[in-house]
Length: 178
Image (cartoon, rainbow, N blue to C red; front, side):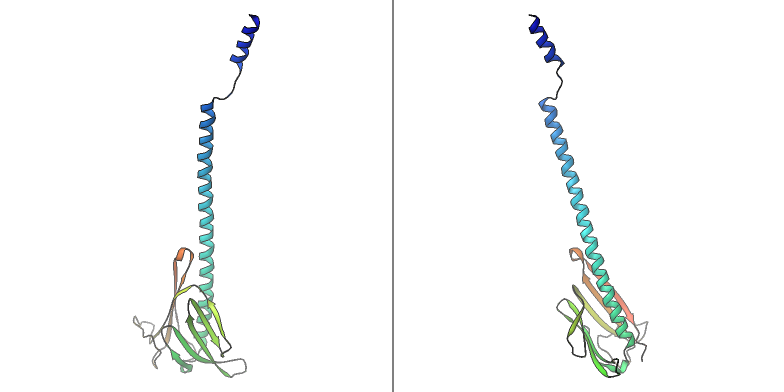
């Protein structure tokens, strides 16, 4: 009899978790892990989106800088062909020899071809490239072909960034060598 009472005391003094407590704890840990996982995925997606957009903006800015430099230094009388999607003009190389320069779209790439040496890509992912030729800084409507009275080249460049978000750059350039 003494042994039976001692056994009951030991059983009553044992401490532990019930099955319900273990299941509730596992469910709460699972919910917390799922929320943390979704948060990590959204942070990673945001980082990738921001990195893609920064890269696209950098490419567009480099292309616009090159176009601005080319158009600023061109002679107005050297333009041999113009349209809304491209321009051809002559410029002097380092040996003062006139070489043709062609700036145009090819698919989704904006390319420059100097001296017929082969086109070099200024930027890719281009969804729109448009040139207009204005007579004055106050012009609101500019033609898409060069004329004898044109003095300003307006550049519109639109690239597709992360999630196909369009990024648009617009710049007006006045050639200084008139």
